[in-house]
Length: 114
Length: 109
Image 1 (cartoon, rainbow over the protein chains, first blue to last red):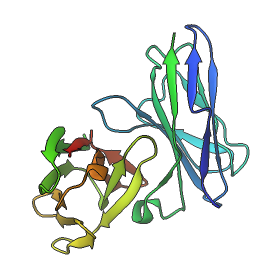
Image 2 (image 1 turned 90 degrees about the horizontal axis):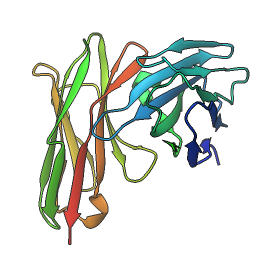
Image 3 (image 1 turned 60 degrees about the vertical axis):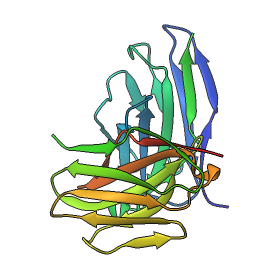
C-alpha cells in the first residue's frame, strides 16, 4: 500500500542534542513538507521540497535543517538551536498539483525535550 | 499577512446534535479550501472546495464555500462519538497552504 511513514512515533531529546525525524513515502510524489503542530495552533510550515536536491524554508525554519537526497525521503533534523522543540511533527507529500488535491500526511512524530 | 481563522476553537455536544464549524480566511492568490479531520495523528482529507455556493456532501458531513465573504462552513448532522476530533481548515495559496488552528469537537454519548 502506498503511503507516508514517519518514525519514530515518539522521541525524547535531552536539551542540547540534535535529533533526526524520518519521513519516507512510496507515492512517487514530487513534493514533501514538514509541519509543526502546537496545541491550539494550526500547522506551521517548517521546510518544503518540490524536487530532489532542492528545498525551501517555510515560516518557522530557524533551528531546523532538512535534506532531500532521494525522492522518497525527507528527513528533518531538530538542532540544539531550536529553543522550544517539544511539539507534534507532521510530514506530508503531494503531487505537483498539491493545491488542488491536497496532501497525504504521515502519522506524525511527537518530540519531547526532557 | 495570510491567515485562517476557525471558530469555535472548542465545542462539546451530545450525540444527535447538529454542529456548524466556521472557517474564515484572508489569503492572496486563493486556489482552494480544504477541510481535514484529525483524530489522534495524521489529518485525513474531508473536502476540497474551489467554487462558491456548491455544497459538497459525504454522509452526515457537508461543506460550502463563500468566496465573496471569504469563509467556509462544515456541517455535521446527527453527530456520533466517532466524530470527536480536531477539524482543520486549510487554504491553498500559491504552492502551499495556510492552516487554521482547528476546532476541537467532543461528542458526548
